[in-house]
Image (cartoon, rainbow, N blue to C red; front, top):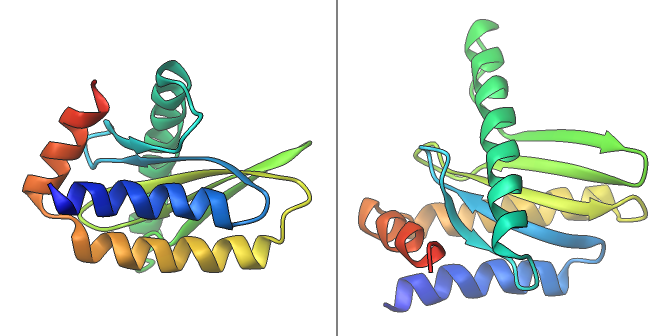
Length: 136
């Protein structure tokens, strides 16, 4: 399906063209892997999807607790890199692994642009197709 191809191409292009980004996953609202960047193995993608799902769930709960207007970006800074998570739409989210020498402003901007593009593509049918495709 063209939309599935478009979604996967956008994800792969984001990793290829954004300096410092090494891995990316798209995760559905029910916490399942929808898409992963090239070079990321199935087991690694599943682990990253589980982490992204858990952290974004906590962040959404915090947003509701304090009356904020939803989730935009969650950032975890580690010794040698970053894990960034952003809402796409309908509860889906994007998880991005980046190196410590990346330009965080640029990566954050590119994440926002990508999530906007993804939001326009995601339909319940596409989400189901992406999840099914990710299982193979």
